[in-house]
Length: 100
Image 1 (cartoon, rainbow, N blue to C red):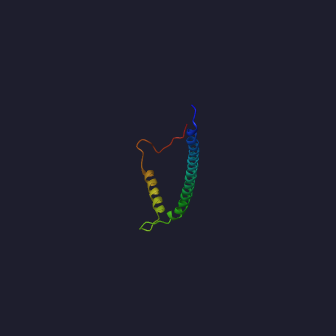
Image 2 (cartoon, rainbow, N blue to C red; image 1 turned 90 degrees about the vertical axis):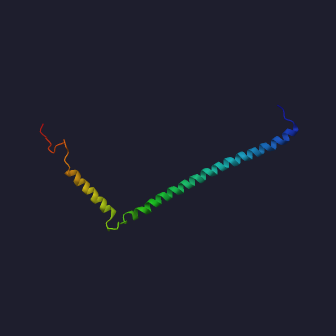
């Protein structure tokens, strides 16, 4: 397959254009990756800071009755523990025989 002079006049400039386009696409993909990485880093920093700031306000919240939510939670857990202790299991006994 031989190329004529006229065909070379058209083919050579088009190869340069194709090379430039390929280089631009490669640079664009690198820029996109860098931007995505920066955005992920910003989100990570934002998530870390937002958790820190919200923790100090979480313990201050009170319900209309004036009790802390932590106190109510502790009372409910204590009541549940007392109810579990009061219940008698239908087939398990309360006596443990340690004699061999």
